[in-house]
Amino acid sequence: MRLLSLSSTVLLAANAAAYDNLLHFGLTTQVETRSIQQIYKAALKEGGVVTAWFGGDEKNQNDAVKNAFESAFPGMKLNLTTDLSKYLDGEIDQQLANNNVYVDTLALQTTQDFPRWKEEGALLYYAPAGFDKIYSGLMDADAAFYGYTGIAWQLIWNADKWKGKKAPVEYSDFLAPEYKGKLALTYPNDDDSILFLFDKILNQYGESWFNKLLQQKPRWVRGAATPQTLVRDPKTPYVATFTSALGLTTGAGSLNATYPKKSNFMSWAQQTAILKGAPHPEGAKLLQNFLLSKDFQKTGGFWPVRSDVAPPAGFPVFVDQAHTDPHDFMNFMVDRERVERLRFWFEKRLGTAQGLSPLDDDL
Image (cartoon, rainbow, N blue to C red):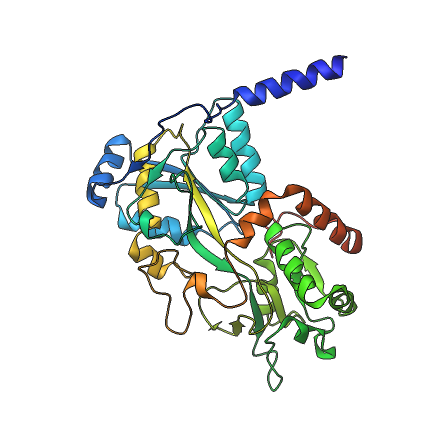
């Protein structure tokens, strides 16, 4: 009985952390009509600070966003924390539960969290300039959350280490004998986006593909940035990965990258939102308008989510890319029972993910 009482108390406390919007009729979206300069002035008057939590697996992964924002808006300070999305969302839940929100805005891979936070009344309904240009299905109709950049995992190889050999173009190519002991891959049971990628591959190529992949003796690592780091390093034996991304480029230094021509692969729009209790709402609005601005969408390095911003020459529109659908990932993520079953299926075969957090492993 004590356990039942304790459980009930915990549930009541959790439910009290935020309110249910079901019967809160007439909620309206704040549609931005001010110029970016007017928002900038309001943010400076507010204190010139915005605190943002971004998902990522390297400490410096979002430094470019911080530097570009602070350069565009002198006097503004972006306190930006990068950590795994699956860790940050729990920290946000704790802030909400304790009624102690100190983060202004979020940008996370855990797309399943945003509809829940909206239902709990934790998000600000705010449409930045350009919101109406976001591709259908990549944003919430009430502007509680929306995608700000499009990402997809690529086939990546080190051309310097792979001279005179055929470049990979499909997932089946990685089963060739010459790749044995030379692949660096992210644990699918440690990152839900990689889990979804493997789900797609196995549904197309069957379990036999995975069994043959295991025979290649890949190095399994934590974090999606780590594989390309190992592949780039001339001192390692690793020549290729398919669980990382360089962005909208066919190469960077010794690394070359492509998307499969026939294989299904995964893509998604990283979601962002402003917390309703944000201590710096004007600063948060300035950041959101910056992220959706045409300039950032053109230069962010990944797919623009705005229909009026074209991707770099040679790349298709994000939602028109063959063999992938960026809408699928959110559907996958909201089915947590299926995600957990898949995760355990891979964990049984690979073991639990080994190593420090990718932000702390110095790889």
